[in-house]
Length: 389
Ligand SMILES: *Cc1c(COP(=O)(O)O)cnc(C)c1O
Image: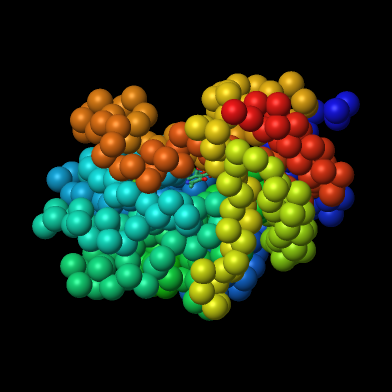
């Protein structure tokens, strides 16, 4: 057994990241400024998006995307139940109603046929998540959006490196929201990015992220001289800091290198776990030519019927063997608020429930070694074998 606890989602921080943060501290400008602008430019160049607007979380990016699309009280937004709370919470924040559509069990992404059934005259937007890093099936969703005059916002929190039919995540829908939270593929500790090709929406979002004051007002004490600002609308305090953008600059330079490390670790996992009884491992092959999986998370599905223990006990057993793990996710329609507020019950979205009940995420990060993966494989094999029914 491992002597040291294996943290789930440990970030890979290099000396150049530390040096850049220290240089920011010494520069005398730690708030939003030149490093944030550089990070936005680098991110736009990497994804191919026309505009990249840095904010302090993906949640903030999702919130601003809804507002920029004009989603408000009385509107409906169709999204997946198999996601983090933030995806649906922001829909509540603008006074709209999240409508959950079921997923495809194999890809864990929204099933476009189920989305089509949920469209009503009140539907304004569809928010697919590129779940685990695999692109959602965007073409049918884009066709639905075109037919019903809807906007699409990609929840690309797992998907910095994701490509769908040759198109990079962040350039497919009208808006896309990325996360730079501590365990995401590119991290700034906390942070997010909103991408769009819409010039007017981009200008609106830039204003909304900093109190709703006129463009570039935050530069007003710089060498470019003082310009009084205009308060255009009551906006938000959602801007990124140079102190955190400093961390993102190097992370983004190493994004492809880190992706290759995670891909290699995923291959090792699948080789090591393919013969283990009682679990299903992820499908590795791209679903279509021109697709690329970002390998944000590596999840297995437990065969609960073939095991003498439940998932909670399985996770406890991993913990006892010094291995951290996670659940992505408990389906939102089964979570207290959404269940009670909208009257969802078990059986409403069976595929999401199937994944929600069985999924376990094993550690995956470019800070891990191949030995770490071997340790996890050994622990999972041990637990699955001992508790085989
Ligand atoms: C992490 C995550 C978010 C929220 O990201 P923050 O940057 O923490 O606000 C939203 N959606 C999904 C799918 C996520 O994984």
